[in-house]
Image (tube, rainbow, N blue to C red):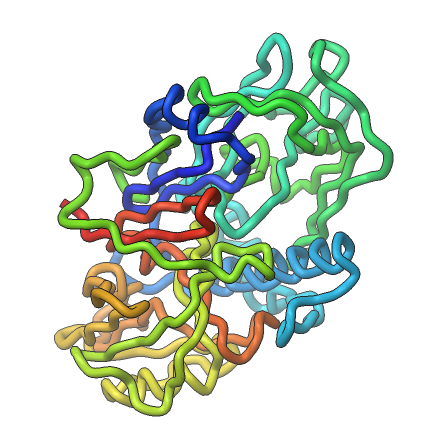
Length: 394
């Protein structure tokens, strides 16, 4: 079974977590999964890639909308304060530009934390994305005869002795109109030699063309720059400076949702922003907060509203503000490098910040922290204790 504790360097995460006992954890020890690099939302010329950011923002909104739908279907209700929003769509102007310039999904602008897993007995290998903000595992089926499946590794259920077909059908509709769907199975899944039996998954037979150029085979966990890694079963002390600071999560929502957060700007707590909860999501590139709260944060450092619809702000490239998050202990700061997504245009003195305002339907006091925050810390997800831990990087 998968261990209760996983840890991430720079940005890497796992969401298939099970109820391994302490004995299981001790016997497994630490297992490291290397993760492929991925690039930020900055073009090679140093300019902010607005279209890519919009596409990612739409994907983030719809991912968490689907999470809420799944939660509601499984429990019969939504968490307090949460709200189902309409499906977000990519503006036609962005779609038009991307179709003329490059595909919507571009391997050179890889936006996932990808690593290999195996499914079945004997094992079938797949390259998937590790995402702490998602719970669905899907891969292409051998029965998929669409052109988008031609270059993918495909799951053959009949070749696995541990595969069992379940009732129902799995499907997800993404904001750009793409979708995946297919039958549901349970099977054995292994990550770097750590195994779980009876894992639910979907072998999709419908895979939209927009996935054809994706370097990965499937999704199940979204997630750096060079050297990123996922550690199963504990922490890597070589990567950590000082002690790990642990915080309880609100486990009523199904997310890695840390309670009691505050935000600081240039060393001072931002006035007018009350304590909030924070979802730690390795499948999201930037950080999001409620629109009004983020506006107060940027006002503190003289930020300028760049795009109201997308909640994006700009600041002087020469004087990057310092934003930090705190959960009752240390301040964990977003570095200037990770805050800066690039110039507003080539030669501009203004740069785009990686903290945006958005209503994701997650409540008025919930923030969503992705890579722009996680690249600054070592993150530990402990499902046994229902805690998330942060530490400074060595």
